[in-house]
Image (cartoon, rainbow, N blue to C red; front, side, top):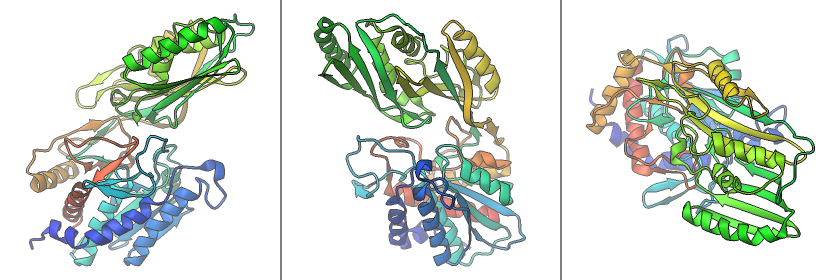
Amino acid sequence: MTIDWQKEVETRKDDLMKDLFELLKINSIRDVEHGTKEEPLGPGPANALRKVLEFGDRDGFVTKNVENVAGHIEFGDADAEALGLLGHVDVVPVDDNWDTDPFEPVVKDGKLYARGSADDKGPSIAAYYAMKIIKELELPITKKIRFIFGTDEESEWVGIHRYMEVEEMPKFGFSPDANFPIINGEKGILSYEVTFADKKGAEAGDFDLESFKAGLRTNMVPGDAKAVLKVNNESAVAAMKAAFEKFVADKELKGEFEENAGQVTLTTFGKAAHAQEPKFGVNAATFLAEFLVDYKLDGNGAHYIDTIHQYMHLDYNGKKLNAYTKHDVMGETTSSANLFDYTQAGDKKITLNVRHPEGITKDEILANMKDVLKGEDVEIQIIGDVKTPHYVPGDDPLVKTLIDVYEEHTGEKGGEQSIGGGTYGRILERGVAYGAMFPGEENVMHQPNEFMPVDSLLKATAIYADAIYRLVK
């Protein structure tokens, strides 16, 4: 039986886009501050989960909502072995650098712009419609298909961890949350928090650093940063302003300099990026530190700024902090300082996001960092969710099947790939990530003006349908 998968997708294009638009309009940024017992991760993620499960109910699938933090849509014999599909309906925060409303999806020049269009609502709906096509064509299958949705993949993975506690997980499958032709290796991911001691009675300078703030999430390179300085030497302000304007111009940044009532506020605007590839971003915070390092600040402020500049600026692989290693298949360590929280009378912290291949452990990295910074009067600890490296061999039948499908649909050669990003694919014993971004396409995940080419979305849907069917027939 020959199936024209692309034709089947085209006949459902309008419905697919309608459902996707509905989902994209939901602001599903994790919001525990407004969480409740019924919606612990906030109303947005819960609403997005309920929306996709609503699609499943409408289309005649079996659905289950696990405490509004995760859920699944299922098709096939309940007692059969399960193929797992794993997506997420939460999104990363947005900033003011969007040209359109991030939660009002719009198609321009063949690209669908919205937060979540590429990561991961667009690919998840593509994979859902692939599953829907198999059901509607009444194709014979010997395994069940279970599509599992999480609601905080971009942060702590609370939802998927809770799901794993109460539901049996499939042994194999894929997450539509990365790149084609396949991602069968994922680096370890974790965050290190650096806390600075308060130097009581620290010497004053021309300026006191009252605050230094940047970053939205640990997995995002900060696109803007702000420092507030108390002016102790008025004669130094004019020179600082001229130097700042020259600095941002020379570094091809944007910046704002404000003076008001004995205070100076400096803001730098860089480029946000996914922490798995920090070299594609412009870290507004470390560049701001590069500027401030030449000024005489109070002792606490100088210590904070000096540390950023010396150990974190333009260091995408953790070499300055001795976190670096390299693996033949999984690639190099990446490191990015992404959260900055400094106030004169309060916290003085920096959070680094590190993604490492096999060959070094989280504790070895911690020990190395402590050794490098032993003279800096700081404490370092591992915080948040820790993900260890994950790899499925290239000769595994799952990997071979998915690559075969990709090659047949694109005419392009496929092969093994590893990433620094973390997907739900690593949860499964034989789990990988598969699409939906094609080779050569711009990676705009976690960035302002995130988009997904509509043609690529439809092409991915056809690939998913073919691949899922081959894995379950």
